[in-house]
Each structure stands twice: as C-alpha cells, then as structure tokens.
Length: 305
Image (cartoon, rainbow, N blue to C red):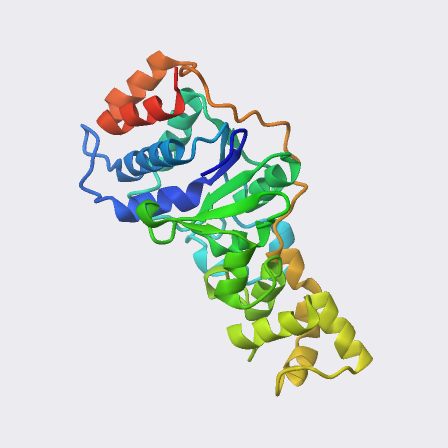
C-alpha cells in the first residue's frame, strides 16, 4: 500500500482506453451516446483511491500525442496511428465524444489535470515524479513507463495490463525479473529492442534477449557505443555488425524513448478535494450522461469529506 503523503499519477488515456474496451459499449447515456469509457474510468479511479489512499492525485494528459521533437528524431514514431487528416490520433468513434466529458467531469470534481504543450502524458508523469519528494505511484498500462521506477526515490509503476483486480506493482526488482536487466535500464533496453506499437524500429536483428544481454554487459547505449569505438569484445554473436550499421539510430534513439523529466509544467497541487468545487455542475453532468452509481462511488472515494 502507498505510504501517507504519496502522489498518484494517472496515465489518463491509457486508463480510459482500457475502460472503453473493457466495459460494453451498450452502457449509454439517456440519449444513447456511449459512456462506457467515462463510467469505467470513474470506477477505476474509485478503486485505486480506496485501495491505495494517495494523498495527492493528478490525471496526466497528452497535450501532444506525437511531439515534434520525437518525430524529428524518428519519423516513424506513432505514424501508424495517424488519422486520415494526417495530424490527430486515430480514435474509436465511440470513444472520441467521451474524452472531453471525461476531462470536464474530473475537473469539475476537483481533481488536478496536467498537460504540457508539445509533450506527452508520459513526460508529464516523468516531470511530476522528478519533482516529488515522497513516494510516487504511476498508474498505467504502458510498459514504456517502467523506465521511471526508482527504488531509492520510491517511484514505482502500478501496471494495469491484467486489470485492476490483478495489478502488478513494478519496482526495480520486478523489471530485473521480467527482462533480465538492471532495474533502471529499461529505456536503453527498449531503444535497442524497439516497439512496433510506437513505430520505434529498434536495432534490426536485435531482439529482446540480445538487447538484455547487451544492457547487462555494457550497462547502457552509451556504454555500447563506447565499446564499439574502442573495439572491445563481449558482444553477443553477430550483434556487433548489427549495432555498427545502426549507429545513426543509436545516436538518437534515447531522445525518443526517454521520458522527459523537465516538461514546462506550472506547479500542480494534486491534493484531493474535501468536496467537489462545483457540485451543481457535476450533478448536471451526471444527469446528462447517465453516470449514476459510477459518479457516486467516484465522489465518495475522491472527496472524503
């Protein structure tokens, strides 16, 4: 369980996507609009707060889902997710109208929302985690954020890939056990291996096992390139030539993979509200969208007074 004074950071899009696909689209507002993602997310937050009792909670948002600095380094970054207009992210039709409602409900309820122009939610979470003096729980279904784990600073991932009833708590030992690498080596490992879901190519011919062996031996991409330059041995069979051919990629990979810890965010106060700051508007939203018991449980959980 999180300690008193802990900060919980929500990877909001990751959670509402999971809610959208996990709750039937037959859950609808009185006018027939799907509200499965809204109600599912509210129920997720309620369970998380009741189970972990964070002192502060921040819903982190993508102000830019495909930042220019990452695309400039690796043009294929998330390119396969582009909608037909060539700029926005392709989103299921039933989910799109629910996203602004989600943001308004959270805001009206008094939860802190945070985003930074030109940055993804991952960068917001990385920045807020870096600023925190106390324990931090990052709630996500995205393994990219495993790079944030830091036992010394009390930063860990609450990984929702198996659902909220079977959440995995990811610390440095869990990263090491899962991937066979040092607990803080995930970003370099991921850059080597690549990730098709993000359009990140990785080093051609270097899979997960070879990437892990390279990180165990050399510690980081910087260590690998230094060893290549010095003509050192210790490379897994056949990997030296592959790495040499991928030097241009290795030079820029971490600028894409690494989560920023210095996004331009104003101070964010994630203290949970004693009562919703605009209870009347929250009730209007609940009635308009038929949020019913999900909204009731949410308010009870996040507004303890």
